[in-house]
Image: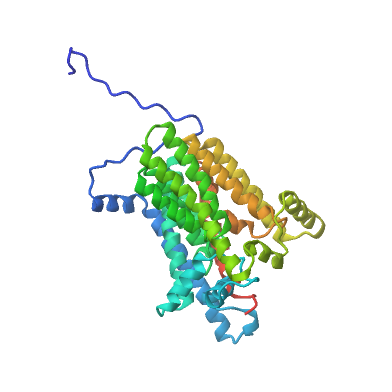
Length: 408
């Protein structure tokens, strides 16, 4: 009984707005590091399992396709070993020869990792695969942990699982930058949310590295700005933390300026990473998105292009899921706006080249797409089952085609 004779009552929690996921309950702060680690692994075990099974599938199919080519004495000009699949030659060229006017389109973080591994006796292909897969593990778990804030734990887990088995998710396990960027982007956001000077500086370092991984990495600055605004509105941070957050934000343009200065020193062209796009017939213009969509529609209608139809579906689908996320996500509206802008910018940048090219691959690096898809899968069990069945089959096919039918 409370003082005065009346029964003490605990206020009932306010219901979540209609259509929005409930926010996760706060976790006890007194638990030891080991207890937190055990709780974390237990809570997110489906995500860890999805990572392990999906990477096993990618590895088994990739190596299996390679073995098949070897035992059948297939023409070496028409297949490539799994370790050297997709973009390996491009990043290896930078790691071995440094930047040229032709390979400057590749940003420096992954080639630096490959060259560093080679310097200590680790084969470049192994250093790249190890870095990509470990970063993807960090990224997919971080994606789920972050997603819990906006769509709830069930949808967050499902979104992460969908990402692991997505048809183009083999890019996270080959010599490419997808795994690195995902890990750095979600890691930067998670650190910023801790709202301490040290964590904000750490967020800035990861954001700068994301910027040096591939161009859309710089868009994490939009998310960090939104997190800072939310923390300022809630008066959760002091002057030192604000200064650290501003320093973190400055690291992103500093990384870009540093890359431009290096390219200018080596090649005499500080914009070499843009000019190298000419070899791929990609030119960034304001009307690029309109040109890209219209040309793809014409190819689908007039030439019945299956490839462009897939690109269109991926583009429209990703855009719709970003809008869905913006309309239904729970939690801080500033954070939701930041991630929405991140998604929009990540879609518009490749479209600005005027070519609809590899959009399913680019959509892999837009967390709101998979948070929204996880939310839809949570409410539609049949869709969830269909994804669990069809995505891995498509993933296996895409892995095989990364080895077979390519120029050796």
